[in-house]
Figure 1 (cartoon, rainbow over the protein chains, first blue to last red):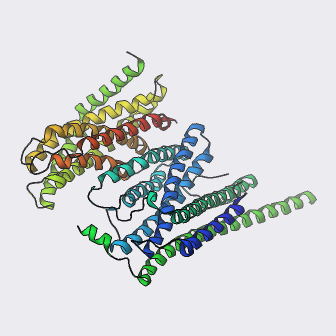
Figure 2 (figure 1 turned 90 degrees about the vertical axis):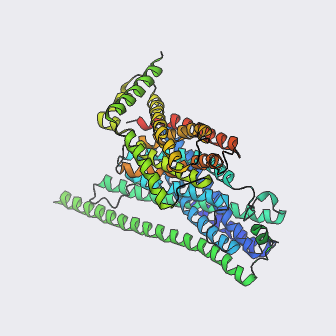
Length: 240
Length: 70
Length: 226
């Protein structure tokens, strides 16, 4: 039952989001270099960290799926990756806005984390056509799990390689190394991170609940021999 | 050289900077709302299908009753 | 010889003999690479390349030529029931993975044996950079072979197989390309081969090879399940 516990979770998410937004605008000190622009950091970076962790969680679920053969892990893996991709869109757009405000360009190749994230995002975008291309459902689930595991292993390697490609002479644009954050900023950052993580969990659970409900309706139809099968997605795994 | 210069450049004035920050947060909210509306249409479809199945089940029950009494 | 080793040798041997007989991948890959060099000569309007431009042209061309070979890697298995044969044989199924990686390595090395000297002929002033380049090529080829074999084995059972391989492979190969071009760029510098961060990039390549070799070997079994 995926709907169970969804309400308290979403309430916690709303509370955390409200708290962190208030902290960002009423408590967090103004950055010396970037001024008010720096406030985007509290949105962009937690979204990015949550998305990346989400991708790796998708890989972990995929391992569980390969080892157990239980289709529910495939559904968890798919939804984790799906929600993380959506977060990824938000990361790239907010990153572009930040780049425009800081540097005057909508995209900069000099920010290694943003570039690495773009590559990871592009890879996970291929997850959908990849699934779509494999017709047999069991095989599709298995291959998708292999993809998710490979892609999960790819994420840290990619970040390392892109960072190394940066010229050591060129300074970092955003200087977001959280090591240098003063205490008050760190607190706000952690609150924002917690809020985004809770949001991710809520959306994943929400998506699973909707899929489950859809699956139950199909089950009911079959049990009653009712006509019609309803629209059926070629790629989204069924949950029941 | 240019980078050092840019690093020392003053931050954008508040009214300009505010637009960018607001823009970023607006993007976040809009994406969230788009997601919610997509889920809303999914839920609406589930509701519609349940309605169909429920009326089918009731109809079948009524038919069975007729057969029994006939 | 253990059954796995025997199987490895048998599959690799079959693969190479088949390619030698039919010559369906290698000539196409080599020809494609050479033609692409010509296109770059006109596209960039350059007759001499050095540094990052030379490195980029070389690696992009090698990569796209490799994709041609990767697309065809498992076609014979699919059409003639090679997958079933492996499933039935009383050996570790991952041996198909290692044998195919080895075969793809051989194809890539053969490709480079032709394409790299032609590249030097077309664009480079001297051939002194070619010897250290061999180490970069070897390490990069293994990573390309491992990842390519993994993706190819999944794509072969799908529709739009030729589309799927480049689509999924290219993002995965980006760290490999970053390291390969990073190592090659100073090698092809105008003044003579340089070795700026050469060791570091080789280590990154080695890391990539290790990770994707292991991941491929570990998951390949699941791909062969019916």
